[in-house]
Image 1: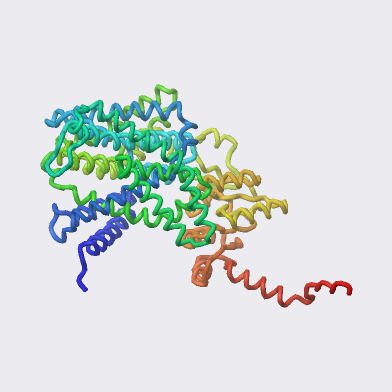
Image 2: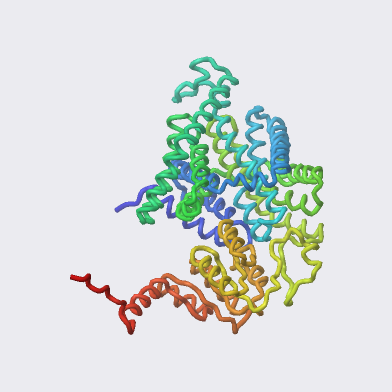
Length: 576
């Protein structure tokens, strides 16, 4: 059997993405750079194997849908409202500044004003993946800095969703009919630019109304019904069908983009109690297609732009690294924030990513952005992501305050430490003789509640918002972060702990926790959970004192019931 182009692009794309992504991870830079380089390697501008570009674009479209579904699924109105007074005006002003700078550069290069606006918009929005990873590595997600950055990012994402809807309408109004393409509404009815924009907004409003009236009821109902069937496979399939189906309906019936449909599908689903499970079940496929999306973007990049147009490239990079950052810094200072907070926000926004690629691809496909614009955007993205850790290091050196929390050794922190570092998530615990529970899901919450009911001192390590809220309700002390992070585990006071319970279901992370905990305290009793004999063996090798497999314990309980010395009393027969 001969392989076709689909198998070839999947094998080459995912295989090289893994190799270059792993290399990027080893070099402590974002794997996203590795995925883009993998695309360059299989693209038409480099020697060797060349993947099917048309097929890559179709796979990338699915990647865009699933990426936007994930953005909607994690959309948090609560996070935005908590910092709305600074994130909303700040993000809008920064988008305006970057767009003006990009438009100016485009006009200097001889492009149309529409091309300049699309180019500027692409340079104005930061990468969600890169920004969140930078904040997580520095344990700043739950800090004041992190909340402002995340709120800022949400506003940028919403603005780009609107741009994805409006840009095709502008292109239709300006370009008119194209060969082989049905005449747009502006040509059929002579609507003009403002007429097309108004009609597009009406379509968007109609779609939003449909989703709020119908989707808000139907989508949660479908997922609740599927969840009650008990089939994990069927639930995963339902989530993907909802994401792709709503995106297709949005494009087919309402004439809006796949991206907007997928975003609203995720946003509607985020209101459901099953949203966390939906995110977890769809994550593997979302990640795979997201990788293919970045690979397909890399295939479009011509590395010769680095030598052919060094001046425009440096100007593009200056807009991303200097223009955006300076605007963000001035805005933060104008709102009375400290220099350290302003510089951290500036550094976190000084890069571009996913939405930039989507806008660049859309602009080129509609004929309103030249190929050079897309090459400059891709080169700017790769270079800005590479330089982003350097910017954070410069911020640390300039402010004299390390972004990353580093707990000091010793049983108790000084009383002045919280005041000196108010923005850090990690504050070493003062507990002694306490129980440490890693993960506060179904197992961890039952365990923690039981320990607290017995009067034990309990420290919970968790980063999921729902689980954090549950731990707070139960009265446990909290340590926000990923327990696999050595700095987080070091703040848990394992040298003084009575016992460590690793209640997370992910055996890989659980093994990391066990290994680090065993190094920190060789005598600490460590109890872990597992789902198979292989996981039991793995966790035992990693240092777990006792590993409990749920299925085995259920079987033991059933056997113990059968072997009870006294059988349950049988009811007496009714009197005759």
